[in-house]
View 1 (spheres, one colour):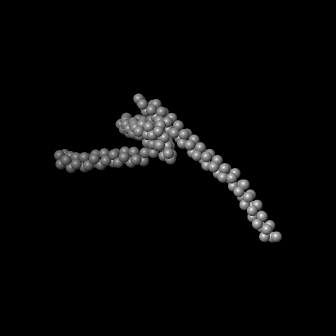
View 2 (cartoon, rainbow, N blue to C red):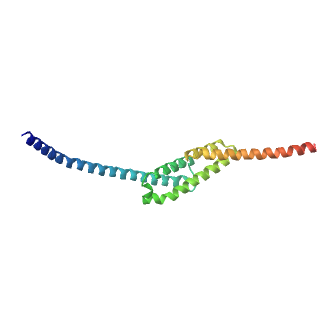
View 3 (cartoon, one colour):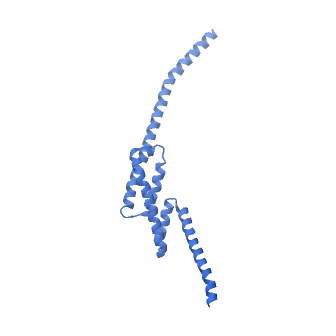
Length: 173
């Protein structure tokens, strides 16, 4: 009798598991569908943002730059967004990638020119704009090192020229 009851109990448990399994599988499928939908929406949001940033960069840098530091912020944001998995394969985003690279090059070129002009004229506002642009592009360290190396080279050249002039002055004077 106990054996019959345990068999019936096992059969009943199997039936119960079977009845519960279908809704659980359905919930799993719906969760997977929602996950894919969420990922697609996130990709669309990122694509929309890249397209917006690309438009703003065109406005900020062409034909004449209006806000170099903001353009640098947008370039950095676009570069971060493009690293989103799958985003570069979106046709509209892929079409903007060459323009984004040109915008970055233009921002760097303008910042470099602004820094040089600011240093020649001792214009602190221009120097600050250029340095902030480099910082926003995450290239400040690279450009400061290059500027310092250039200045050190000029000092060494001037020092060498003075060292060559000093013996000539002593001999002539």
